[in-house]
Length: 171
Image (cartoon, rainbow, N blue to C red; front, side):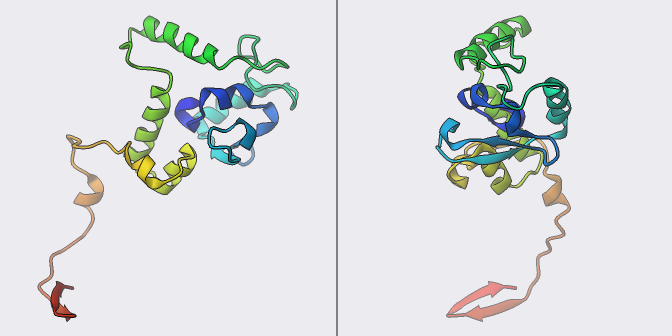
């Protein structure tokens, strides 16, 4: 949920089964549960939809999506610190660097969406950032591979000039 939908751990702990809409591939984040205090729908990728469909099968709409009962749908929500504690255990098991925190999943999700070619406005909206400037900070610099969009852009230098207000422009 953090990687695919860029949902923060406190938001995750307060989601209800009713917030999941499998028909529209969206998850609703209520303003009172959101860091920025604004309600929003986030998009649920196909990979996550399959898992959530199975996860909520037979659950009550009023249940928390992930409860204190081993993350199964239930009537008591889990404490947000539980995410971080579980992540630390998983990180150790996977022998990942200790600098990789639970929120690294969100950062990586944002970066992977940008690298995949998802436009910045869509990534901004999914992350629920206030501005493109905030989303821009996740754009990786100096990639070691060529950009196919630039290679195949079809842009060609033309030797035509046009004078506009005492300045010459190529057109």
